[in-house]
Image (cartoon, one colour):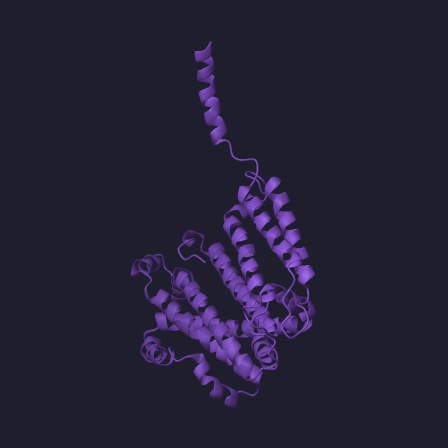
Length: 338
């Protein structure tokens, strides 16, 4: 009887070992870390250094507590293995590291004052920026987005057409390609004085510089994609009676699209650097202007808040670009990751 009982215990123990846990353990640890951040922010008094206390300290502590409670509830219900929020699991380590880094930031700035203000501010200073300066920051984001979209669309369209033309036409390849190789590597920001001199307005000058920064990588990589299409594709299409326009639109351009998206990715990164430079020089609104304004008034919290918004904006646009690429080029999904 004891031998039979032992034979049943082995598979039961193996089944219990293979059974997934009923809670998301990393989520619970993350909830404890966020709770620690909230308690430390609330109970440890801020060190006053020549000015009044940091604003929104209590609100930041309350926000940390709300996040801790939400993570704890998610770990016990929807985010546990097999739940609807199981997609949160890959971010578990970051959800633990983020509050711990915020704790270190809080201690070095607001609590001990080891990093001198106003050059370094605690995390709640960002909350103050986003709550009290929403109108100015939101207007700057809207102006930067409008300027960026105009410049990127113009540069991408002209660069794509130029790349297809150079890659397809021998005459264009002979005359235009050397100009691309000679003038293309020149940074767009180097032409800033000429652009502001010849352009009718500072806005049009900024659009031109952003378009120029986007134009070069899109044109070169589109040309490379069209020029490297296998000749066998053209031979098969010509055998079936395809015209020259059909070869360009249905063979050359689809085959070059992977290279085009790489060019767009590179152009988007270059356009952001030119955007900030152009807005600092002459445009009356935008994130670059906001950064310069914050530096002029020594409002370093506003500067850090704008930098964070810029990082989110740039990363979001690149993620959107790769999402479109994956939809159009499903067969090439995963070759270039972001």
